[in-house]
Image (cartoon, rainbow over all chains, first blue to last red; front, side, top):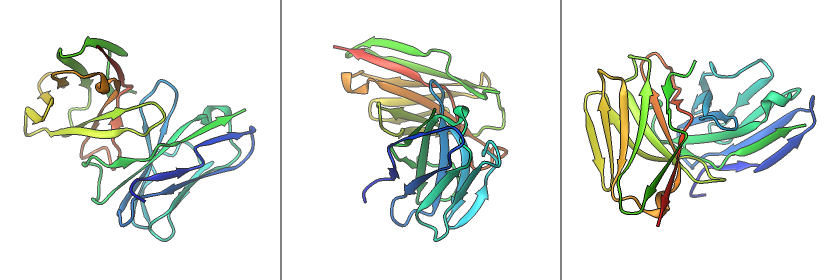
Amino acid sequence: GAGVSQSPRYKVAKRGQDVALRCDPISGHVSLFWYQQALGQGPEFLTYFQNEAQLDKSGLPSDRFFAERPEGSVSTLKIQRTQQEDSAVYLCASSSMTGSNYGYTFGSGTRLTVV
Amino acid sequence: DQQVKQNSPSLSVQEGRISILNCDYTNSMFDYFLWYKKYPAEGPTFLISISSIKDKNEDGRFTVFLNKSAKHLSLHIVPSQPGDSAVYFCAASGPNSGYALNFGKGTSLLVTP
């Protein structure tokens, strides 16, 4: 597709449930980023992939968060045993360049609500 | 701690006038700065960027100014148009921030006809 596609757009999870959020980056893009945006805040970095390699996972808030990009294209962000503080919009972005110093393209996000 | 700060949550400007959005940062190692624009229910869209070796970058109606000594940057939009109404995020990166962009909390701009 022409842009970064994320699914589902909305997800409601009961506390303790596991969720999986999908990101389809722009075809051929080397770099893929995940960000978390809480209400009223700016996006906060979670993790970065260059092709299939996860080069930076310093922003993942706990070991309940796990991301993968096994074939260097589609990525999945998994959150285990969701908690209320995980409620946020999860944004995926991709870029044809490596690193962060470029205006990469964001998807529309997945809004996760944990009840 | 918030390393990029946008102290004005909102701004209202008349159509045709100049909009000035401000951003301050605390990390002196930041050397690249970006502005993103976000409409409701959409992801942020890259607008304009500036490297620390410059103090100004211009792209059409949008100009970003960087004052390194004050650790301050601003985005000027002139003339402002109703379609510019959106949330604007300032972001920064540097050699010690890994692959992360550090975002501010955003400023909501409303351009009134």
